[in-house]
Image (cartoon, rainbow, N blue to C red):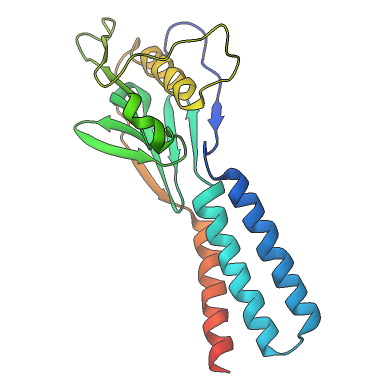
Length: 209
């Protein structure tokens, strides 16, 4: 059964922290790796370049790859090396504090991309529970802090609150229709893991030569 109303657009949100550090880190390891290869054509130079490449993959995976993608009828929590695809209409609770946590059938699924700065957590964070009192009688309950508000005097967007609002809207929209038969799917980040494995093997071989 199709959900009533117009379809929600695909939305994608990158990491709320660490992006600048990640970009600078990639630039740094790239410069070091290229410089070493230019100055040292021996095995030592190759070994250092491989080490920098390994560091670059890890920087990408942990600081730049994480993302939350709302792709109705599911939401994808993309972490460093594993993705979790979760049916939106099965989400029971949304909690965004240091990380984003979605509760489905009593289980917690964590996305590291979006979260409040640790220094602000004491002021209260998001905690939105989506009740199941009827598919069309959706109950929202804020248990750990007030719902996001818009301040007219401040044009700065609080990204974690904004993402929480978008997640809440997407979940409510999907719950309007018949329940889906989908389930949570976990998948590995195959490209990153493959590159990491190749570089690690090459680095070990360079040490043994």
